[in-house]
Image 1 (cartoon, helix red, strand yellow):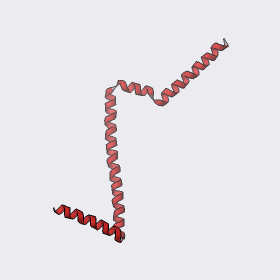
Image 2: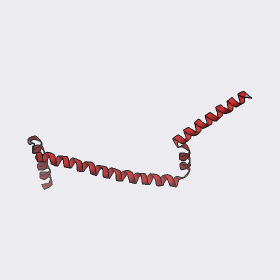
Image 3: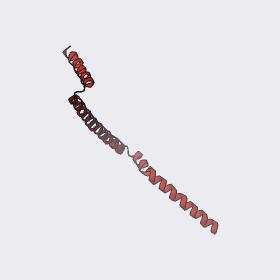
Image 4: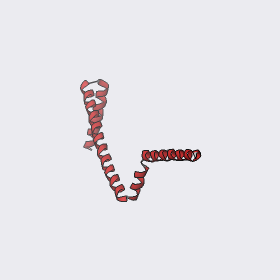
Length: 98
């Protein structure tokens, strides 16, 4: 009788561990999702849209910060950097004329 109860407790603990692991890894949700292809398509579609918008916003913010820093550097009128930037501007202007 005692051996049977011990096996029952061991089995119960194993089932609890398995349930915890499945819930933690969201395996049940994934298996349900695989059966519904329309939901997969919608989730991937919206995920792609949000990633694209996020990349666009992030790139815009980083570019604005870099331009702001470059404007501050040009206003400092440091000889080497100012000359380098003016050379770049001249090169761009000569290629635009051609």
